[in-house]
Every structure is written in structure tokens, then in C-alpha cells.
Image (cartoon, rainbow, N blue to C red; front, side, top):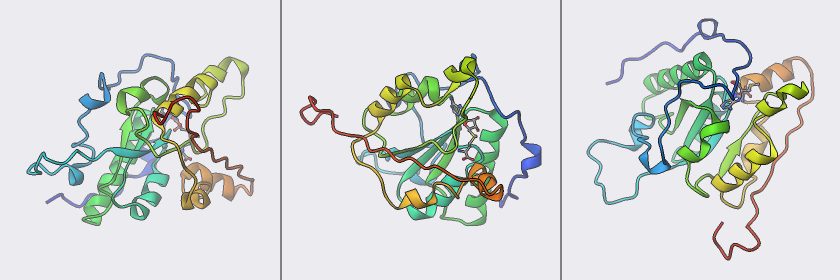
Length: 215
Ligand code: SAM
């Protein structure tokens, strides 16, 4: 049985606000999505004795730049059979989110097995983790705006990257999650505390016009 772990304390996981997404971080990522071993991240969904007859479960929601993991924790009980992955570039922040989830799993057995956080650079490695049209939702909550022109290349939303997001997303979208987008993460709560406004934007992945069903 997993030993009950105390929830992590943020003061031990603080890190500079930004990590350079273009730098060569030491990151592990699979050559192709089919090479990724998801079992260590979602052990409850990959029991060792499971019959191999069924196709393995796949991650379906991605929280890009998940920070401390607030959205994953909020969505986990709403979609208990859906695997959700947070991708976070900053080492300590990703470690915090992972510890947070581990502590929740230990404290509430049977819950939070469907969420996990991976230290990863979503700007560089998304297609290494996800197949074409694998994801039904992607979240980008409070992505760093990088106002300075010289830092625009660090933005997680850009025309080039939109093409990648279109590749991993399946057509469809928009649902009850929308109401929670501004309030569930640490950054969202900060904005609310400061009495500032939140400007949510929701986009639906359209069918490719000439794809003939192949999205
Ligand atoms: N979504 C969280 C929230 O609402 O509290 C965190 C918002 S924070 C302003 C933006 C996060 O995106 C940071 O934690 C940052 O490290 C992460 N990030 C930025 N670029 C990234 C990238 N290329 N890959 C993964 N994470 C990234």
C-alpha cells in the first residue's frame, strides 16, 4: 500500500517565473508516442496483471504549462475515467504538481489516478507524446504573455504551434469545464484576489475541409 504522504509545501518548490523554452533542457521524451510508457504516471490504469487484449488507455486532456496542477486536481473527479496530463517546463513546479497528485492519491485511495504531471517542453515535444487527433481538449491557462518583442518566440501560443495543436486535437470541444477555467488554477486565483478580470477564450477544432474524414 502507498504510504500516506503529506501534501507538498509550495515554499520548497519556488522557482523563477520563467524557464527558457528554447534552451536545451535535459528532458526525457519518447521518439514516438507509441514508445511512451504511461504506466508509471498512471499506475491505476495500467495494472501489471491486466490482460493485453484491450487497447491501452490514452491521455485525452492536456494541460499545457500546468503550473502547480490546480486544474488537473479540479478536473480529476469530474472525468474519473479520462486520463489527463499536465506538461510543465519548470523543474520544481512540475515536481510540486507531481507530489501534490501523489499525496492526494495516498490520502484518498482510488481517486486522482487519472491525472499526472510530466516535466516536458510542450513547445518542442508535443508530437512525441501524442498521436494525431488523440486529444479531445487542450488547456492553456494563463500562459506567459511574454510582452517584450524579443521574447515573443517563447510564447506557447503562436501560428506555428497552433498547427501542432491542430494535429494532436480531434474535432469538437467546448463543455462544462469552461466555467472553471478562470478559477481552478493558482494563477487564476491570484488574478481573482487582485480583483482583475479574466478573459477566457475557447476554440473548437474544426474538421479539415479537404480531409475526407481524416482529421
Ligand atoms: N496554468 C497554470 C495556472 O494557471 O496557474 C500556470 C500558469 S504560468 C503563468 C505558465 C506556466 O507555463 C509556467 O509554469 C511555465 O513554466 C509553463 N510553461 C511555459 N512554457 C512552457 C513550455 N514550453 N512547456 C511546458 N510548460 C511551459
